[in-house]
Structure formats: structure tokens, C-alpha cells
Image (cartoon, rainbow, N blue to C red; front, side, top):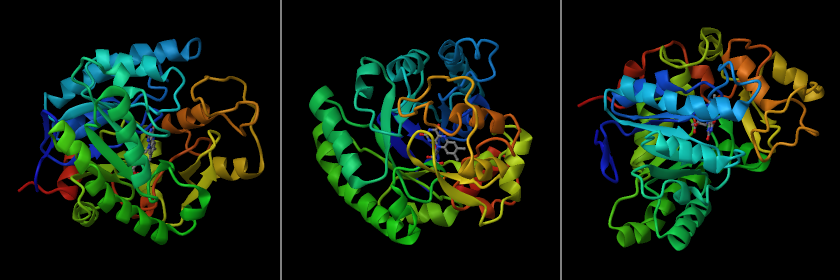
Length: 354
Ligand SMILES: Cc1cc2nc3c(=O)[nH]c(=O)nc-3n(C[C@H](O)[C@H](O)[C@H](O)COP(=O)(O)O)c2cc1C
């Protein structure tokens, strides 16, 4: 299996571990993935949730914690692979987070949940690579065109996410009700994006790798992604059931115990559909509402006056282990997870060393 070159960096294994907030992918998981030659991704979403400063000043706590997590991950990686930071485009103070990650030496910044149109601005004159997560050829093209026109720069790589993925979806409810059809459209979009990006590859004189995300469970799924013309994969859900994942053991155990029918799509408080584990909390929120006693002012798209619950609080409760009273994102394959592996074992299963 071939390695992937991202500008001047090389990934020995063509695997990106998807950024998972809140607190699911921090330095332990990201560092372990990079150590095995992949790209480990720290999610910037409330990354300082367990800092003593957090309740009084969440942004300050996050901005202090992020550089520490990047440093820890790099130490664990022993200079293998890459350490990236995932910053959602809808993050309040997006630019401050992006600059902080860059200054702390993040090898890349990956942004989804909207289009990170100004990202090149924040990595100017640094070696930090940039990528966006998109769900269609149209969005991929739009991003590449916007960065080219405004900044004279191209994406260093792209992540294309299918409708099988965990967490927030780049799809509306309609396609999500017919997953097989939506995935066929997605796969055709990946093939076409491989062609569309050639214009930029020629202009900038380098290859722009594509990583396919969403529902990657085993080596066969990796091979299918590569057969579309992709260079690698981004994997989220499966990395949760690893020894190194930063979440509480009770959280990981939910994934080991889940049955195939245990996921569902909800409308998240930030206005996008999201795929989650069907648990007591989600059942309660389908019909009810929780009092929001504190607003972290975290996402531009959230309206605390209208939201049924605080998404930050629900994700923090879950990652700490209160799995019946918190929100847990997952993909469509969650029911197939049967055991907790080490990161090394999982990456070897997905892409065996030759
Ligand atoms: C628990 C969880 C948390 C996630 N958090 C984020 C996040 O903070 N930002 C983001 O862009 N994507 C987030 N995602 C999406 C992942 O980064 C990844 O793209 C996706 O999970 C890939 O699909 P898979 O879960 O089918 O492997 C999350 C996914 C999960 C399962």
C-alpha cells in the first residue's frame, strides 16, 4: 500500500484520523495515529473542557490548552506522520483558533461544517497545510476556486465525506433517508473531483490528495475509496474504540456494545442533521427540552434561545462517561464494532504494512 505525499510531508499510511470533539480526539489519540505514520487530528472544539479555567472563560481555556495538546501529540508521535487540528468553520473566533494552532506548530488545519473561506489568511508565511471537508464536487470546486482567486493558493489536500459518516452531516434530511442512492451520487462526485482538481494541480505544480471519509470500517472500504481515485481515507468512529482514544472508558464501551440499529439522525442545535447513538438523552430531547443555564458562545450557527439543549454541555457530559445523559456521535457502521484495539492494530487492519 502506497504512502501519500502532502506537499513536502509524507504519510507512511494513507489514513487521517478524523477530528472528534468534544475531547474525543486530543493528544493521546492524535499522537498515536501520527506515530504509526498517519495524520492524527486534535479537535479544537472545547479542547480545554477539563481545564479549571473552562467555566469562567471557555475560549481562554481552549486557547491555552490547544498548544499544550499539539506539543503532547508531537512528543507521542516521535516525529512520525502529521499532527493536525480540526477547527469547525462555524466556530466563534475561528481566526484566533486557526492562528493559535498555526503558531503552536500544527502540521495542518482541517475545517468542515461550512466552508473555511479565509483559512489561507491564518496560515500565511507558515508551513501549516490546509484542507477543507466537503461532501460534494460542487463544494470542493468552490473551495479551490475561492482560495485560488483570493489568496493565490490551493488546498494541500481535500477530505470528501460520504453520507455514512459520524456526527454533523453535509447533507440535508432528504438524501439521508436514502443512503445507498446518496452514496452513489457521492462516489460519482469523488471521481469527478479527481478530474476537476487537475486544473489546480497543474497550476500549482503538485498533487492534491483526496481522502474519502464516512463509514470506513475495514480494508475493503479503504480499497473501495482508493478505487474511486482517492489517495487515502479519513476515519472517525472506528478510532473511538481504541485504547488511546481520549474519551472515558464508558464512552468507548457504548461503541463496543452498539447494535446496527442503534444510530439515528437528529436535527442538531446548530441547524444541521447529525448522526448519533440513540440513547436516553436523545429520546428525551426528541420530545422535550433542557434548561440551558450557561452559553459557551461556541458556534456561530447555534441560537441558545431556540436550542433544545446545549450541544457543548451534552458532548462534554458524554465524553466524561455520563453516556445516558450526553450526546454521542457515530457513523452507520457502529454496530459492527466488537472490541477495543490499539491504534497500531486498527491501522494495520485498515492498511496492512507490506
Ligand atoms: C464522536 C465524533 C465527533 C466528531 N467531531 C467532529 C468535529 O469536532 N469536527 C468535525 O469537523 N468533524 C467531526 N466529526 C467527524 C469526523 O471528523 C469524521 O470526519 C467522520 O467521523 C468520518 O466518518 P466515520 O465516523 O464514518 O469514520 C466527528 C465524528 C464523531 C464520530
